[in-house]
Amino acid sequence: MKLLLGFQQPNKGSLHYLDDSRTPFAPGEVKLSYVPQQVRLFSLTIRENILLGRSITSQQYEKVLKQTDLWDFIESLPKKDETKILSSNAGNLSSGQIQKIGVARALVQNTSFILFDEPTANLDDQSANDFERTIKELPVAAIMITHRAMQNTSEMRHYEIEDGTIKLKQSR
Image (cartoon, rainbow, N blue to C red; front, side, top):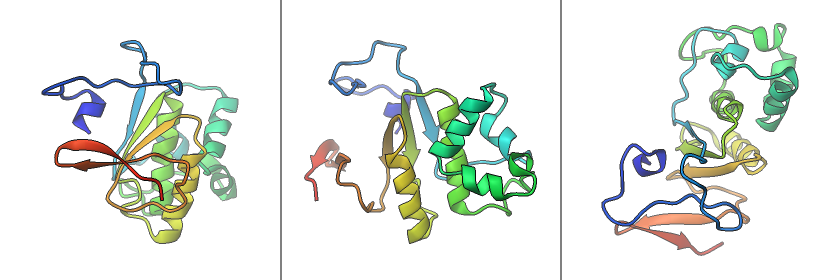
């Protein structure tokens, strides 16, 4: 993960990000967002927790909420996205909703890739399946580091680290 985030350099070889046609991105062109296993929320409104001071249009904001499957949930709240998150442990939100807020934050950054660290570790099976469906529909590349086998991932590429080497795992 440290290599992907650029916090560490490879001991040997190099790391390249490729587009769909396997052409390397130019240096500085890659915009990578990180969603940790435990998304940290602040005692602010849902909107403030998603934007974290960034400015986007209301159309862009609505699109992000729909892409992350948060729109219906937020629209059902009496104060909508002005609902205040009660504490840093977000006692008034489910684990799945918290993860989706993390994804929305990443999308607001206009990113090329989103790197997820154990995104379904704290979710029940239904929430994990819902989250996986959301990830598959995102308009950016998702890189997930996980120990939990994912369901319904036939069009995804799976890699495993074995003996210090990253290997493509055969499709199911």
